[in-house]
Length: 367
Image 1 (cartoon, helix red, strand yellow):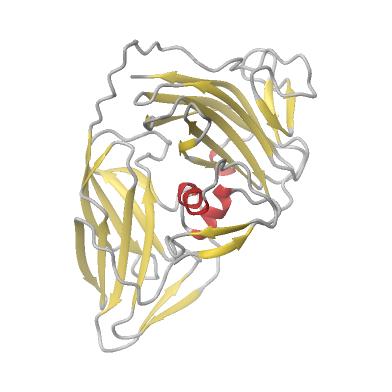
Image 2 (cartoon, rainbow, N blue to C red):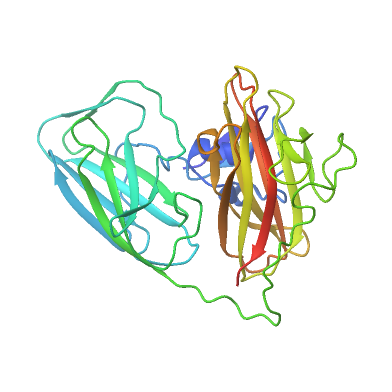
């Protein structure tokens, strides 16, 4: 079901999509937006697919080719995916349905606002957990399911592991569970397979070089402007660098969004690794209440948006006053893409006073 939403101060398409359980790409398509970065306060957007990743009552289950059921405590749990086999980089859409199959009302009690959990494993190894990077209020609640009543939970796994890397080909087990008191340890599981992807043949080899300009921000003659080769806002030239003389400090103006970005030419069908080093700068006795988004946007020769890679990092992932290395794999760059924009977005909230330091950014073609 689609709804209308009026853009508010501080909104981005990513935050709106996250709020309503859909994707940026679907909002872009539903509203025929030429540029996903440009939305205006007061603009009315159509939000498609409202209801994903949230609980609903009486929703018909969408059965995928991977479909397993299990009865636990009077509830029939059915876990499904939209397909059983995927190519590397393809989204895995997961659905968990719980239905009261008894003739009595079942009461479920929760200690937080979290209602479900999805986990992906390869053998015994934890690969991905839906709740990682999310926060849930500590609020007890009760949910009642009448006989025959059901609830549905949905999520999408982008085939990236807990470190943001594209997973290898092979078989994976997906677990779904209800986190109600007394039930969190019991899960229903199903299996999927991810096929290996052969890169599109190209006429030139793939050199292992950093294709970003000024990746360590050493060329920064004017501290009032972004470093050479980069664009952005609310950026400060910092001497708290990992290497060299300078690093980028994002969010120096408290309470304001910060952006650091660079566009470079890329080849469709290739696989790239994005690598960066980040540290949270703790200022005084303040608190870190922000989200750091790390994204790669793809555009065609005409500058039209064709897709993006979208891992998400929050302040819990970034050590205080100490740099840590992060990396993500793009998966296969979508057909038609000719330009990639590497973008770091700093989104503060509440009474945040801390900043994020970025240094030594790399974008390398792997094959």
